[in-house]
Length: 521
DNA sequence: GGACGGGACTCAGAAACCTAAAA
DNA sequence: ATTTTAGGTTTCTGAGTCCCGTC
Image 1 (cartoon, helix red, strand yellow):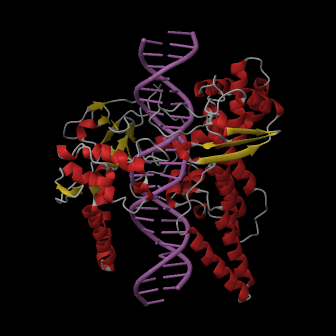
Image 2: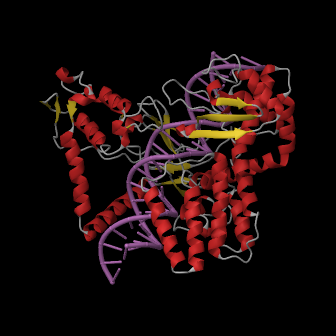
Image 3: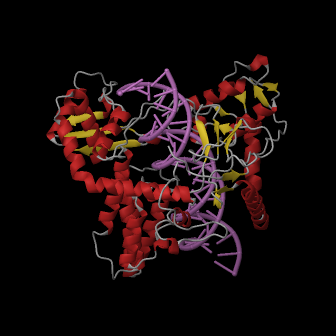
């Protein structure tokens, strides 16, 4: 392990405001109950969710009650959610929303400006660090406020109270010469081998939470570039990697055969590797943790259906080589539905196998490589030198969509999606009726794309998977400003690609990173 | 000297926010 | 021209991956 930095100083982290109690009460089975300030804070957070589906979820509300009822007067500590009347809190939230709604435009504006100002002031203090003598931004300089735990999917802890983080929970990382900001911190360390500015342990989930530097910092910039360089190495070695996997598929060594089969799924279907998960987390799987119930073999075709990361549904059909089908058949037959298909395989073994083929290769690199390659292929599938910007832009989005589909980056469509589609269709009909052919064609494409992206989230692949150099090169080739393809913050994130195009911000460096990711030890 | 678990890092969609297009 | 709405962008923090130190 070598050092990320030689000198590091910052002003610690910003803590959220204390909750100001208003004295609101609840009724339990019709009887008045006073609330402690903390209980009131919890009830208020619950009320904030009053119009969401979360509050309809019995696990959510019963988890909430578990933490909330502990703070009630002894007589009420066994109260269930349905026995408690939160209507005063619900009304309060409604009132606040109505007040906000009825506010004059000027008032709204001035309030927004005020918020922005105070945020800027806090950012000036907490949002920057000095790393090796250079000022850089900090990403998440505000400590997470207390609230209800909003786990994804069927997380067993959803609705539980996530307690407030206080200064003595937080460990700071600073260089030896910097004096820590005033107050009592849990600890101050000088860990040159770590990138984090501060961390604490979440009291509910017991997971570590970190404060990181912004993506524009030289450290992050060089790591980001290194990630895509590593993905390119997959491409260069793909034939060799695949022949090693094919070799493994036929192996008489059971462990080797299972590892190879998992690698097939990772390579060809873009599955994540799937680490083991705890009991108190949502039940999701990846390639190595697939269960029999997730695999359906029908002759030469195999269907994979399961919940992946963030409980996003996965559904892919494949016609794999016979060796894969054979292995899958052997590993699923005679097992119960909830048994692991690859009972001998752990993610470490997969990564060990992969890095034995190409040093540094791990499972997740396949997703980066294939997403990038997919986008690249779509981009160059058509000649755009003489097209209009809008056509180029759509083509860029097509490439993005193809990568998102490969990665299975889904979203829940907005509530207004259907209604919005109708409007688009109306506009299209109108254009057709009025005989404006060009406009009709544009709208047609808009409708088509709108439908095809209904369940897909394009941002994630753009931000994390597609090598920005691919878009940069294509934009240069067809004569399109890459600022039309990337949002401001992504331009900043990817400023390592072409510093001259970068959106600059006073006081924040956008110079290219030094070639080595880390300092020498 | 392998395996294992904690810790550090990257990736993820929902929600909040903001701005540009539509009415 | 002004207000409303839509949709793109940013923020937030939860959920993964994987490495490294330890036993």
